[in-house]
Length: 364
Image 1 (tube, helix red, strand yellow):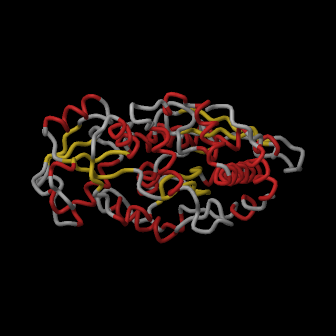
Image 2 (tube, rainbow, N blue to C red):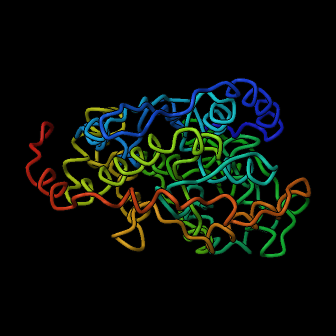
Image 3 (tube, one colour):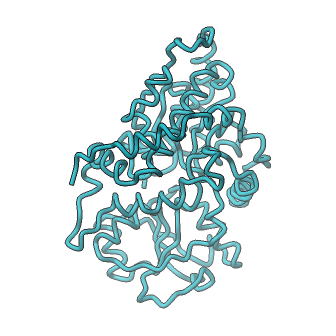
C-alpha cells in the first residue's frame, strides 16, 4: 500500500487551495441540458481497482454522460496524494481511504464525505497460522510487520493494541516489510516478524502466493467507513448540480453491478487486466478484492446508496483521534453531508436492472 502523506503536508497544501480556488467560477443556471464537469482523484496509480466498480460501471454504461456530467477520473497514486489534490483545489472530489479523510478532518481541514461508497475494514492485522497467536492480546512483545513507516494501517494497529493494554511504542516492535511483495514474503517465511498489519489488498497478494494467514482484525472495524466521495464544502457550494449528478451516476453504477456481478468483473478485466491474472490454483487478487467489496459496498438500506453511518463514523474518528494528541475532537455530523442523497437515489432502478440483464460479456 502507499504511504499516507503527513497531515502537516496536507495542511501546507491547504493554503494553496484557498489561493487556487478563490476565483473559481460558480455553476451556471442548472438547466437539464447544461453540461457539467467533475474531476475525481482516485487513490491509486490506476483510475480503478477491483473494488471501485460502481464508478467504472457508471462510466462504461454512460450514466454520467446521460446525466450531462463529464467525470475525469485521475489516478493520484495513493490516498494521501488524492487528499492533497483535493485540498489544493486540483480535484473536485476524491476517494482517499478513511484514515486519510479522518486525519484531515481531525486537523481541521475542510473535508466532507458526501456519499459513502463502502464501509468495513480496509486495513487488518494478520498472523501466520503457524505462529499460534489467536488474538490481539497475544501480540504483546511481538515483532509486527507494517507496509512502511507512516502507512495508513499504523493508526488502526496502534489503537487495537492500546485497546488490549499493549503499548505500541514499548511493548511491540513495528518493522516495515513492504506491501505484499518479495520483501514481505521473506519476512514472514524467515519468522523475522510474528504478525503483519497492512491493507487487505496486500494480503490478497500473499494469499495468491499461497501464504495462510489468520485475520485478527477487531470486529468494530467493520462498522467504520472505508471510502466515499470526499470533497469540500467549497466545492459543494460552487458546483452543487455537478456533484449531485455525479452522486446519482455513481449510485446507478453500484446498482448495475449488484444486479450483475459478472458484467462488472468483465469491465474490470478490461480496465485492470493484470489484477485478474490467476495463479496455479485459479485465484486472482482482483477476484479476491471484488469478493470482499461485495460485503463492503452494498448499503444497509438498498434504497439508500451513499448513506452514512454516523455512529460508525464517530467511532472511527474517535479511534484515530486516540492515537495522537495533535488531533482535535470532531463530531461526525460535521463532516458528513447527506443533502445530495435523495437526488442520488432518485433513478429508474428497473431500467438499470434491464441494462444489467442485457449486458453482453466480452471476456471469458
